[in-house]
Image 1 (cartoon, rainbow, N blue to C red):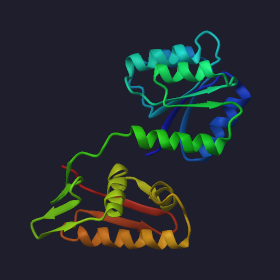
Image 2: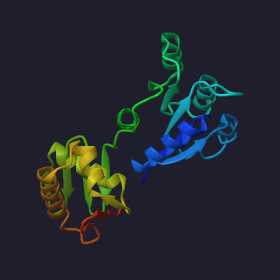
Image 3: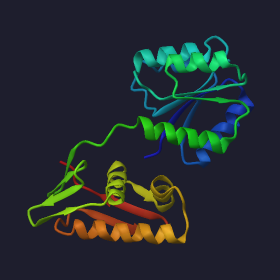
Image 4: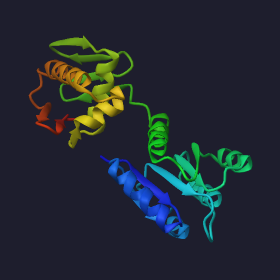
Length: 227
């Protein structure tokens, strides 16, 4: 499942460039040139994971828009963009509840890194116990329990299992796993990932409903029956 970004930016050139770059990074971006269109969505499902707001916009500035969003969607992650680099702007944005602040023109790679860091900080913690088919997974004790026996996972195995559970039922790219969990992508980390996948398959071998299928050259498709 792709991260859905709300982008409010009235500059057509910068907005288009930013949207295209973020989509190349595998984000799903909905771009609003008119901030009033964002306000119209606040009473709806509002299917976004993070918002990127330009401060200097007509009719509704970024600060005012942020206040409206946070009033309806408490703790919604926000990042401000502005052409100005004044201290008062930064302080005001942080006071409102922004998670980060980037001055334009910004380095797109830095922006992507900041977005990912915000999402890591703000994503909800995994539940203490998860039922996976015939298994129980205690995420705090790292214990995978089954009537046939228990196994205690390593920290890395826990992180990988939680990542796969997060995208249960979807196609997961190898590169996305490596970038998210190993923060690097080379031959050796790729082989390490294969070893960890093999371990998880072995741990879940007592329940044939659970599937971790390799897609050659792409990644994996997982099916965890969750109860």
